[in-house]
Image (cartoon, rainbow, N blue to C red; front, top):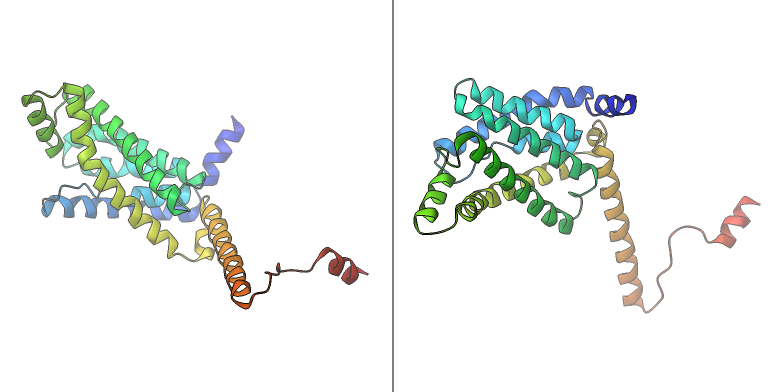
Length: 238
């Protein structure tokens, strides 16, 4: 239990706590912008995903929940979606801690996982709380599919997928590019920062080795590994 509590405390660094209100504001602005422009997107998770990737699942869950609590102050129908926001913050935080947002093939896989998790959670909450239909456009699509003869659950899944895929893809990509633009010194202020810093350094190392191999191939000479050999090292030590 003490180890569990310590892991939570480790996530809630001073920088993470200071980032939470900014992330909540970012979520509110993104969601309001999408609503004002009548976009078929939500754009209300960018702040949550940013905090989750940097500071871990606990801080991500708190940020997501607080974001929806702020919105529900003026729109009580948003309150049930607090569970979704917290859940997605935790999912993204766990995946980031496992290095799933550090290389492009992993990012693509992560987007699919995030979309699937969000679709399942949306369908579950919409069915349990709203009886399967809410005021969002995805429910309109689901109703149209059911009227056309599609099975209820298939219509629910497909309608949610059609909106979650572009929304979560855009959200993840925006956050990934923002994190890639951050300095290593800033990243290390967060509990997940070391994951991104190590991945960045490993990528530079791979690029350096690739450049050495390419230069050697052009010159017709075998690539020479950087650093002293075993013999050189032993000689230097003597």
